[in-house]
Length: 488
Image (cartoon, rainbow, N blue to C red; front, side, top):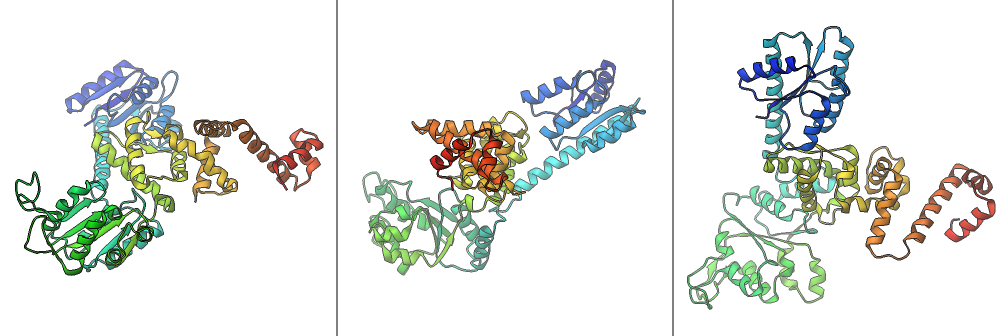
């Protein structure tokens, strides 16, 4: 358990609480000022406190200001405010600020210890609930309509043995869906065996799939069971099936057609009692047209097709997924979970995530390690996210008027408003410079002038002379700029 942090500029108060809590077997750490507490939280050398007990009146930053900053950084941390009897207004403010409880001075020591123990129990209960939420999370998370379609399809296939083809971009969670199909199928009691056909060298893939007899080739010192045998009675998941060599496609087609196969170097046919689920990020129809994939195998695999949407088509799931991944990473690293500020979350919802859910998971792990504060702000996000924001904003400037970030542009507008247009401009300039562009000045200057003139014309309902006057330029200048920028 983490220690109880005590902050009070009175050393006698700190001493009394330290000794009382030590007798109860509770570790403590004391501070003489709110600044020392905030420095310790920022330092991150330990996991922080289990409970924070703070005086309300101290030189410099007072207890209520400390409460506000701590709640912003660690919303789940119980904070007990110590206050004098006469500080009724302060007690009310403490509760409004989110304090767990307030402790009147002079306090009864046993009651103070009992109150701190209650706060500790509450804190531990919240940690257990968070851990249980991670442990008991469903195989696949998603509330977006596209994901609900996937869940319904898994439900309809729950009593089926039919072959399924899962399509979707890399990182969308195709193996998770395959595991869910297995778990909810009549073969759930059998093994689930997965093989990535693109990750195994061509000359070894046949042996991996079908096994080999002793002496079948150089180095085959003993008989080896292949993945089809290992998956007996269960499910075989063939990932990246679009990369399978043509000669092996022929052997796989034979297995799917008559249910029999041979080990490499073998002469006795073996019966395959497995359900095959295949997945690919490629366009198999295009591969068939190019002659890189057998059409008859394609039709054998494409009995039931499930398409997994990319993350950019289910942006409403990003908060749910990010919260889960941050909690999961924190558990792995034995630290307190980081939390995303509203603006940081909007930035993630504005990002297209070319690597999909896998990229979001890696990003959350990066934030758990690298983000300096407990609450992740937009400035703490990786450069690839920040650099993409101005582009998303440019896609739909009017989205800033929306109350909630319902799409990428609207989310980008929320973020840009929070970080300031100068920072957004700087980020866009850095992106263009990184691409090696030689016309950055002209490109950004024209976009800047277009925004100014558009805004002025909207505010004057299209009256050019009035727009020029409000911008502080001449009417000849605005006429010329309208022509140069192609503004109607």
